Structure formats: structure tokens, C-alpha cells
Image 1 (tube, helix red, strand yellow):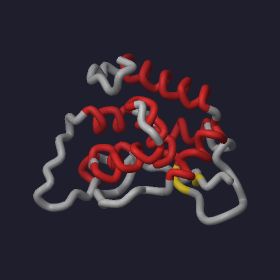
Image 2: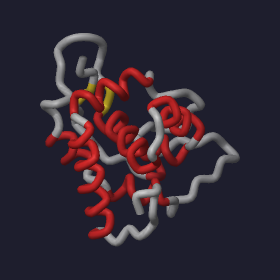
Image 3: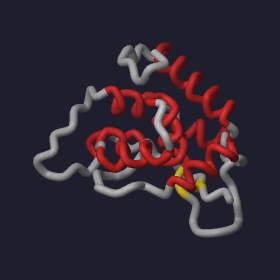
Length: 148
């Protein structure tokens, strides 16, 4: 059931994000700013046991899956709409740690559903709230979603 991969994590920089030519990306975009302030590696270590499994195909990166869950919570989207938004938006793709823009879903909606079940809806909400509190402490003032 757990298809998530704990990695030797190195924070991707904005300059490493591969964008199609002619598609300018703003370094000050609210999703880019948040992505660069979130301690992904620390979160990955904290939740590694929730996402580990010795069965099935190679696990997906924590940032990809949890980033999608965070987008879903902040924007109050369905599983399907969350994945469509990620597919269509290079800023969201950067936020979830993809190495560059690709016009495709990062995974199936069933993966998102399984991740939410494994962590628990209340814990996902609590994690998002803690990260949003961290953003305020870090001076990130851009608002995302109806919860603000």
C-alpha cells in the first residue's frame, strides 16, 4: 500500500527547475516561495515510517505525495481536480518537487486517496496547519486558499 520513497534528499533550487522555453516562471510566486521555505527533508524523516513499504513498485517521493495533499487541502479540491491543477500549473509542479514542467499527472487519484488514508485526514490537516504556521513565522505573507 505504501508507495513512497525516503531519499537522500537535496533541496532542489528554483534555478534547477526545467521549464519549457518561452514559459517564464516567477521566483516570487507564492508556491515557489513556500516550497523553498518548507523543510521537506525534515518532514520526510518525520513521516518516513508512515510511507514505507517493502511491497509493490518503487515508492514515490514524499514531497510529491505530501505536496499534492497540501495543495488539495489549501485549495479545497477533489483528488481529480488536485491532479489536474498540478498537471496544468508549473508552479504547483515545482511545489511538489518535480524536476521540470511536464503536461501530465504525477500519479493516479487512487495514490492520493491511499496516502490520505495512511496518514489520516486529521493528521494531514494538522500537518498543513503546522506548515502554514511555519510560513507565517518565516515571514511568508502570500495567502493561499479559502482557509486564509
